Amino acid sequence: MSLLQVTNLSVYFHTRNGTLKAVDGVSFEVEPGKTFAIIGESGSGKTVACYSMLGLVPMPPGKIESGSVLFEDRDLLTLSEAELRKIRGKGISIIFQDPMTSLNPFLKIGDQLIEPLRLHFAISKKEAWQKGIEILEEVGIKNAAQRMHSWPFEFSGGMRQRVVIAMALVTEPKIIIADEPTTALDVTVQAQILKLLKELQVKRNIGVIFISHDLSVVADIADKMAVMQEGRFVEQGTRDAIFNNPQHDYTRKLLAAVPNSEKSAQENKAEQNLVEVEDLKIHFPSNKGEAPIKAVDDVSLHIKPNEILGLVGESGSGKSTLGRAIIRLLKLTAGKVSFDGQDISRLSAGEMKPLRRQMQIIFQDPYASLNPRMTVYNTLAEPLLLHKIVTKKELDNGVCSLMDSVGLARESILRYPHEFSGGQRQRIAIGRAIATKPAFIIADEPVSSLDVTIQAQILDLLLELVERFDLTMLFISHDLGVVRYLADRILVMKDGKLVESGSVHQVFSSPQEAYTQALLNAIPGKSLFTTESKGF
View (cartoon, rainbow, N blue to C red):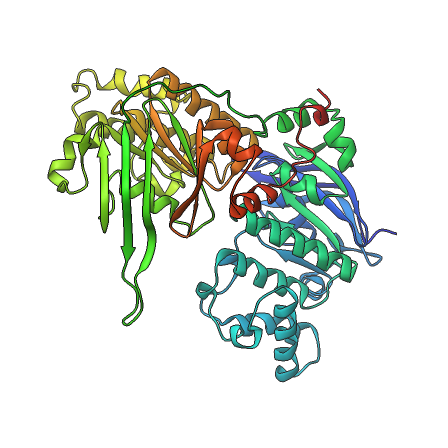
């Protein structure tokens, strides 16, 4: 028996520039205790399809052109706003992608948890508060009675996601729409959240619609799934059928883009290290009377010329702090950093300026790191002129050459960052980093928020640029599959310390530390992502 039956749903957006068929004739069913996953790249229509069922897509410019959505013998598409409000939260709940933006920063967690209870049920505040405590305990939050009085910013990313799950479950809905609920989480926290969702689903016999662009995640949780491209389902079936025997070219393309191979090991015979770090410490002051925060605690490492060193660990492990300290974007508490044989540990900003040309960084979020008021031309021209790479007469050719190097069309040279996709913005950030022809680049989580196909393109671009320009790279990530594909060696970081190091093959085949083993065990979709399982 189906909880939800969607038939021939079409949602179009009518704008001055024409009509966009965001959802074009999709049909599917959701069963009790089962997970139906919708997979596709950003802009494929996944979220629009699900949100439109509950009247959460702005109309206009959106318009439901056709279809029916049957829930409890009622077509949701024919209900009034008042009738839909009674179903939202109580009958069908949503777990949104970003828990920080979906939680109200001005309300304590308890007040947000009891709001849907008071809205949908005739229940006192005291009864609702007790119910809130119980649901927080159910989703694994310790000291639930005390945490009801906490603010959203006092929780980690994983804990905030647990709170959002609690809010979705507190009214005991029959269906949950989980919209990319683990996208921004570390691999271990992601595994915990997915396990929690599955346990609660089984316990309560809930039907789940799981929206994601991450095939690895879907491989572990889906019962049935659909692959969505440009508003249409191009393939639909059981999880095993689609992963083991994909029928559509687009599905094969998505599966092929998952980084599941290991970089060919090549011995680096360089005698001198390009980067050396000895006993590095970065401590941050904390509240009065408390010990300082040891973000990086006595770390030593080396990177050889033309080597890609992968640095992995969970959020808060100190990875980004270490990377920024190496290129002197942070003040060192203690220790030594050498670059190309020169001690740069105590150089002033003025003394570091000549070295900035040789050391560059690619930040995690290209939209935040690019100036929204500067065109691509100006963004790429700035380092060329600042470091006197080219003359003003040569500037146009220099910028166009960078555009070519990172695979961007020259016709888009006068556009602004908001006019590009996430992958294209990351290409701009990479172009800016290589503009000075550096010897060393730090790539700080450069593909963590990208679709799997775009991620594959960026990774291949980085490999190509490393080889073409003889670059040396520190690649920071919490995604071990990505690091395995890209790196020559791996360092594992936990609580400010390096706990394991070795070649990619050594770390993946025989991890020595329990923490490394836990990271590897948390990688989603391991059993399905082999060459044989893709049907090639």
